[in-house]
Amino acid sequence: MAVAVDTDPLDEKPGDLIVPWPLVDWPAVVRAADPTREPTRGRLRELRKQGRLTDGITVTRRGGRGFQGRANYYSVLSALAERCRQDGNEVDATALARSASELEARFRDRLQAFFATRALADLGDASFSEELAIATAKGLGGWRHMDHVLLASAVVASMDGDIVRLRGASPKGLPVDVDLPRPLVERHSLTPGDLAWVFSRVVGDAALVEIIPALRVPIGNREAMRAPTAPGVQFDIFWHGQPLAAGDDGLTDDERAAYAKRYRDTGAASLTDQQTAAIKAAAGEIPRRRLRPAG
Image: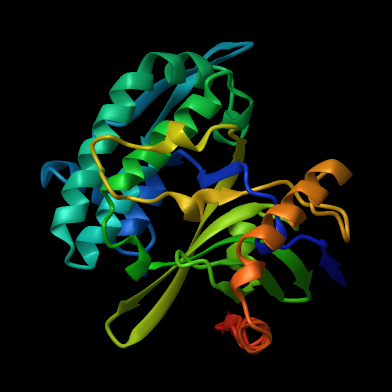
């Protein structure tokens, strides 16, 4: 049975922020170090001994019957730092790990209080989730070679049998389609309409495709995203907006008329018929990049 959503991030109205889920559990960090092996506590301790792990957030979980155990969460930046190390990119790994440590320290008390009674999947309901997402996005400003491994910021568009299609945009803004095995997507509890970041990397003679769940945070002011410690870093790949109805450009009639007049008085006035034709031809030649490891 096919399940699909009529959503394409490339057609959305700018204004929202899409970032990886800000926190991950300890298995996600261990998998980032070696995605070909199952994560174990022993491997987690080894990463800690080697100084490749941030302090994380240790949570004491409580319920109706009192103490229910402990859980360990880490900034997603910590997992991405380990990913960079596996690619031999120690400079970016160091910057991401430093940002992860700062973020964990800044939000530790609030996260411990929240997770005492809530699950990781509930993080979007936290009163500070938007602040946490923005801090995470700013921390990503230290990742100078993100575009070498990030394939797309995407939405789960359809689930047809054993194949799941994600549609999104590359860091350079080009359209990307990715077909993945359904078990991989379901492992992250993603369903049509959910968001994800899609990564690719080479391990030995194999190419691996990995995903990290993402979330949408409404942001009204892009200047809030400008990280003074990372001059020149652009965050446009994080930005997507709410889906629009078919044929809707998000403008009122007056706004549309004003923009049309401005265009006629400026850009359109300087284009010849030949230039206009060339632009239209080029626009139709931009390919949609497709990756189909699932078949």
